Length: 261
Ligand code: NAP
Image 1: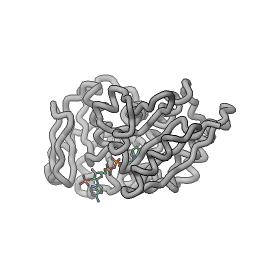
Image 2 (image 1 turned 90 degrees about the vertical axis):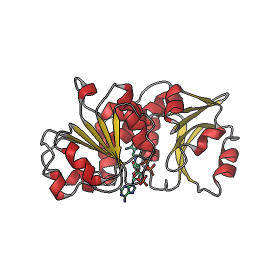
Image 3 (image 1 turned 45 degrees about the horizontal axis):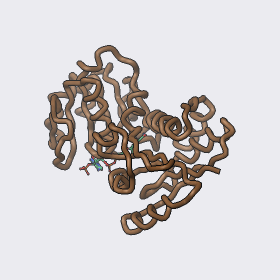
Image 4 (image 1 turned 45 degrees about the vertical axis):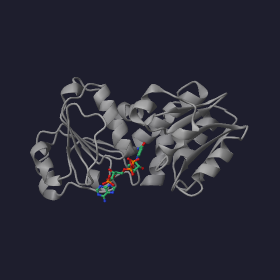
């Protein structure tokens, strides 16, 4: 039986085992997906031990080890290298690291004409925001504003502004086409909410609860829920490991919705 794990700091409540074990059962695959909670102290020794296991076929990596894992991997796909973060590892003759967050996020966006010209705000600039920023730059977006409370060096500088001052955002809110939240908080107060157009697309990548504080502050706008990115990036990992993309059926979405609402 092939073994897969998600590894990270607080993964005991991760939805990934539910998603992958559902797909394994549905497609009659002799495999099991579990979780492994690691911390800064035991990460190195536990990873070395895990990578010697003969039945290990793949790993997903989550906060805060998406960069740390890279020193244990031999080969990388070009996107993981550019983003400098790995959330999926395939284990065959050699280990190969991938990043499926950026493309998984892309699949959640409605197919829009001229995404290049959309005015986009990204709230937060941690690991996931960086993958989303990479995606938007890859698609040629040339009007992005990133807000982060702590000063950060932007990785993809061209046509992106950075601000540490939430007040500075005011001048971009009223014209924004897409606002993407990647922080655990709602940084948009009621005064700012009023500045935002009803047609602005709101996206939160945090998925538990489904209706986050950020999304729930908006009544009329179109919303993209974080759970859709989780499922899409998982489906891409599945394809890397097993060669085909599993279908995202209503039953799975229902099971997940029941857990996070
Ligand atoms: P991360 O690297 O730890 O980054 C967290 C970001 O949130 C940083 O920019 C941080 O700002 C900001 N932040 C944290 N607390 C804040 C606060 N109180 N006020 C303002 N900003 C705050 O985490 P990540 O990997 O990017 O993940 C971010 C979230 O997305 C997590 O909840 C994760 O579970 C979720 N996620 C979802 C998916 C999915 O598939 N849906 C995929 C990846 C991640 P500082 O730099 O100032 O600390």
